[in-house]
Image (cartoon, rainbow, N blue to C red; front, side, top):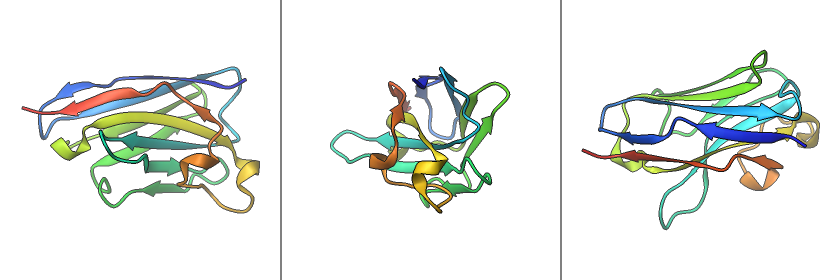
Length: 129
């Protein structure tokens, strides 16, 4: 059973940076597509970034493109989300998620949260002065 544990959230001022980490155990992430999702109060869960487990293709939401960078370190079985130039509207609970690449068929990744089988507990990111 794959388990995901997030860390790195907290309070940061506008324009600041945070790096979220998601450590996996129970299985290697080599063959999994990874996703970062966020949910703001009163809002639905949205995809922030997704990384293919097959070819490394990466998706970014338009709202974070150029500011956030997702990466994976298979040797450490960890996925990261580097967040720069943070804005108050980035405030949300951030989740990491994983799904076996084979379950996605021929697609490199999927931005729908329903496709993901394994989830971290979520970590709060608050951007405020």
